[in-house]
Length: 405
Image (cartoon, rainbow, N blue to C red; front, side, top):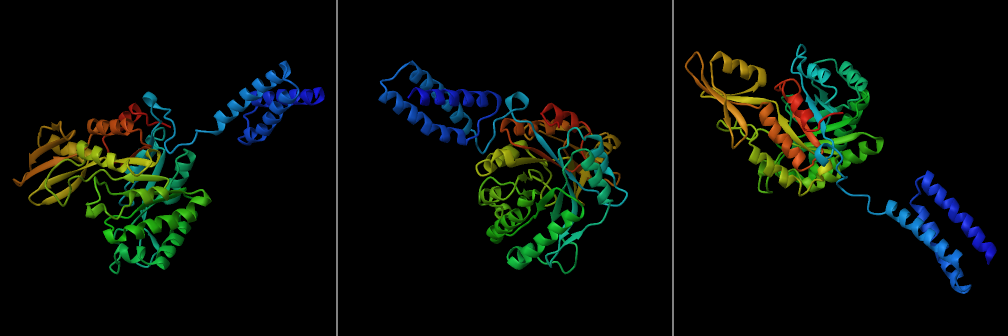
């Protein structure tokens, strides 16, 4: 009996040493439990003794530590570690340059590599035959090269915007398994051609009838790309209930299973289809975020923030970037008014032809309130549409809210 106790003593000392110098594998607890049972039984049969007690205490302590390591450490929402007890925030920059000489997004990216974690270039559209068509524009390879040099992953943004006269609705592709497979083949080929890090699906105005079809597409895309190490993300319309026909196709709970990142497009609260008003009213943004959090894990959720505005007049509505908006206000000596309820700025002016205009836009102050929500709900981060059209003050606000690499 003493021989066995001596052997057990050496085994315990060995296990203690490995616990101190090397993390114990999850299987160690299971392997040691029979040993503890044997030791207890041996102690009982021999009438007990100091060595038995010591062995029992040491093994009990050892197993307790092992169980602490192997249980209760996994959760859908990892422990917060960043600013103010919250997790560090991730910034996705939507990258779009509308003509060959437009370098606005590249300049913004190159100037803020310390803040931007990922870019999603709008380089491709999905065609009626299920193929992905390049939109042309700037030199994709040079953008990807710069991003890689600065540790910025690149996700191909694929949109369903019309680009050919024969284009048919997105429904035709989503409802056809063969066309879904063909489009996934085309997306995979594109990201491999340019050495990209993943995909950003930006299917908009998807019919409500395609709710299950969109989820099926994302499942098939995820199962194809994710095992290869690619990031799969999707942009979704905001909603506050399931009665919103425009956003009904986005099954938040289902999509959360098949996406690494979900960007909720909390902008265009007012736009070309409506009267003048805030681009992203803070109350509307928060309610949309609260609803999304019922179905999407916060470590996957990104709040989209706009860098642009709209100019409304009797002649129509035009989008406007921050710098041109400020130039208009200066040109017409317009007073910029702060709407405290919406947490957004706006101004009125009368053009040279006598037409009355109202401009709502976004600035660093309005951004700050939105990033407060990112931290309040401790979601993964934010996504900026788009790089290069924002108030230059945005970047300091991002840093103040924990967005840094």
